[in-house]
Amino acid sequence: MTAPPSRRLKPPAKASLATPLAALCAAGVFATCWGLLHLHAYAEGQIRDTPEYQAYGKAVVDGEVPYRDFDVEYPPGALPAFVLPAVGSPSEHGYRIRFDLLMLVCGIGVVAAVAAGLGALGAGPVRLLWALGLAAVAPLLLGPVVLTRYDFWPAALAAAALAALCAGRNRLSLALLGVAVAAKVYPAVLAPLFVAHVWRRRDGREAGIALAIGLAVLVAIFAPFVALAPGGVWDSVVRQVSRPLQIESLGSAVLIAAHHLFGLGLRGETSHGSQNLVGSLPDAVGAAASGLVLAGLVALWLWFARRPRDRETLVRASAAAVCLFVAFGKVLSPQYMIWLIPLVPLVRGRRGAAAGALFAAALLLTQLWFPTRYWNLVFGFGGYESALVLARDVVLVALLALLVWPQAGTTPSRPVVSDGRTGQARAS
Image 1 (cartoon, one colour):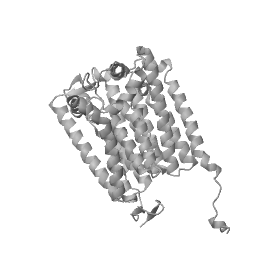
Image 2: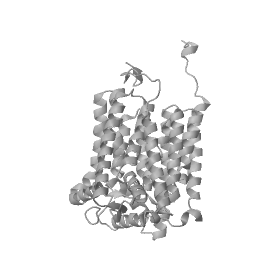
Image 3: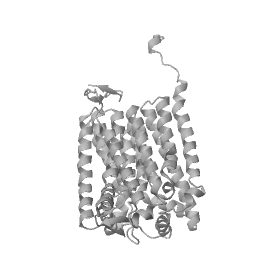
């Protein structure tokens, strides 16, 4: 029997090609921006982490065990980004080129994940163009720091996890998130949002299974190193938790402003791989910042739990959680801006456009002083540089406020649950 016209399956529309074509174009723009960062204008004054990465990678290639035979600052999931470029023991220049190419691949992976997320959200052409365009030009806005930091690796994993969740691949999503947390701890702030989303749209059992898979992946990555060097792994965690107030954080920016305006005495020191403010007041500000981040995340998770559990709210809450972690943390290195590249562009509508503009401003403000003017900030708390840092940090706070600001005229929606037969969401 022929189905009624209204029930017939329609052939795939040409518009279905919009997302992959837009992703391909965005990847090309991303690669072009990446290439432009190698021009001579960007080469001066670079502050590279690649020598440290190469030392880690070479030690592993030579048969040494991380955390046991040598100290590692980063979690085990970061090791592939260090070891792969070190295979064959290249020169320092050769390692830098290989690492550069690896991060380019990861960056293109970020663009692909953003496109996949937009496809799952049903984004139209204008939204695709805006979001993918912002993600593609972000490296050029932020500057050459992207070439020598490994943060595109965890950012790609976190973005893929979010895209999978938007597409309804709950278990895959939490598994990818487990890998992302093992690469750099910050994606852990997304875990409560992901689990709550699965719980509401499916049920508690599915949420529990997905969470168990994510934890199993995380444990599987950490377990060999904990078994071989429990003390070394623990020391790595303690070093990160006990870091002092870093000079680029919001707390430091406020203290340095007080130094310039009111003569507040401050003292800097290099430790934990960064330049920091030390003393009783900076320590107190750092402790307050940590408490504020924890309280803010709990409030954000509870806010999300009370909202209609749709995918648009999920991506907005995810961007807000990472923005909060970055903006108010006691450490705010320039590469942390990379974490937001796959998240902010996913926010829809006028809020998304405003958020994208603020994010672009924060990226540009970072490039204006890092790396070329960074040491002016460190040695003497340069007034111009410290003003730029404070402006960047304030813009991040404004971005967070925009992401969590309630939308006028909204009313609570009925909870969304899953249809057990089709797996599709429906209103209860």
